Image (cartoon, rainbow, N blue to C red; front, side):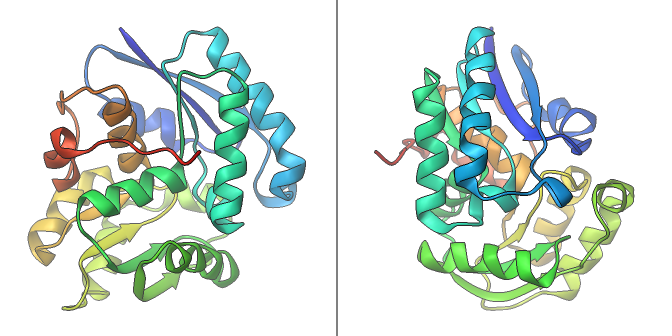
Length: 242
């Protein structure tokens, strides 16, 4: 029995509603929450002590992998912010650690995807922060659009077909992959349809974190998993910055 521990925003409802159902059999997912989005969003320096405490709680539960799972926060302060989060998780004693930002980078790398279409539910400002993180990490964001949704209720109420249609509208012949960002949106039901119609891989926040956790645990069971990304499970050697 392997265990994955997730630190998520308190307002997130999609992790338990959708993401956990796509973890392969024999793996248990444990979730703890922090107030870190919307009115509760603070700098990472202010958030780090809470992250370390939450990671310690998941380590108490014998989680094999502990993940800081919030796309906007994990990308908001670039590579330095990502490194701060990874260090906090390691200080808590977790055997393996990652963040949403780290998982996304590794997923894009194993897919050899350098030119990206980025779609988010976020404001223009948060979407620009995320695009900046990706560009700093060496990717070419050929198109980025945030839909300025009014918080978690709208994120969760938006059907997966909305994201399918927006991805198809954003089709770019020069794109290597389509990144549908945010752990609080429903995308799993349409990943494979988008990939088939665009003939490009799709990466989502929740999908990338499952893939990263399986990679860190050296597990190749992809039952329940969606998307071309999982074809690369056996080809990936996980890398966590020092």
